[in-house]
Amino acid sequence: MSRFRRRGRDDDIDPSDMDDADDAQAVVDDDDDGADGDGRSTGPWDESEIDDPAAGGRVSLGGLWIPGRPGLEVRIEADETSGAIIAVTLVLAGSALQVQPFAAPRTEGIWTDVRQEIKAGITKQGGTADDVEGPFGPELRTKVPARKPDGGSAAQAARFLGVDGPRWFLRGVLTGAAADSEEAAADLIAVFRDIVVARGSAAMAPREPIPLRIPTEMTETPAGAAAEEDEDSLKPFERGPEITEIH
Image (cartoon, rainbow, N blue to C red):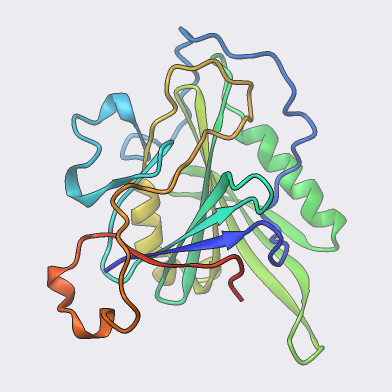
């Protein structure tokens, strides 16, 4: 069973926030083929590479097809002013994976530049950011100073993934146990690999977010009903309560 939750943009700030100062760039032509990065031979996929994106239980969120997994909770993160969906966070077994798709130029990928910008932002906050070779190529392992509920200090770990596809870029941020443990990250890495990006043919500026939407497959579940239903009878994605904050 997978559940959907809605989250507001004004929740706790995450180190995954990307500097959008350079977003205003030349618009990508509709007929551009785009750049394709290394490490994508087994996913994530472009919709042109998949006969049926819905196969295997994937559900469309507009610019992304998200695969279903037992126990996977899908949190929709929306701008509280515009209502636009800005990210999707997948939560499984004590770990989380935030995914965001962006438009990219036709001639080259943007992960190299984005990675350096994230690295600069993390170090500016007093954190550390190390380049590591991962399953999708170069990635960042970061730690930033954080405040614990009791007022003490701690280091918050995150693992930044990036994949350049045909005229798109997909970013993933692993937190929780998956940020430090390959074993804990394995299931969410598999989910990330199985995502299909549906950029569409519209002209978009590089780094412009690819539009996302709440899937039509989501269904309301009466309070308390989930505990009484057999999980095998549920659809791969079940709509959970929409909330503006998740703590």
